[in-house]
Image 1 (tube, one colour):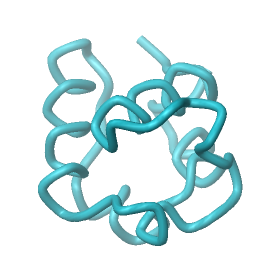
Image 2 (cartoon, helix red, strand yellow):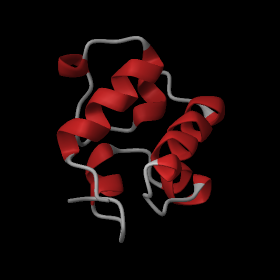
Image 3 (spheres, one colour):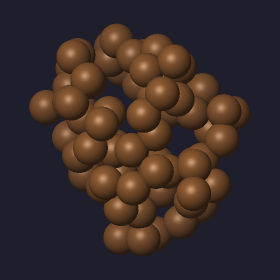
Image 4 (cartoon, one colour):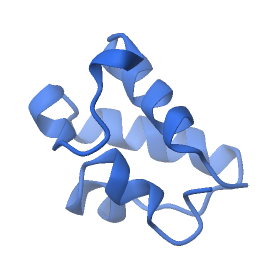
Length: 75
């Protein structure tokens, strides 16, 4: 299963308790409050759905545009 940019944005907004429209696609999500615990929450959620992603991949480039470009993540 692959994730769309909008799906990633929605999931990030959910773990940050923000409106998805307030989450940019191309900015560092750490600046919006994304921390290691929330990244692990996303990793676990997406792995349960069959997305092959690691904490390190997401933490190295914490931006939706970077994540959607990862092999096995983006649609």
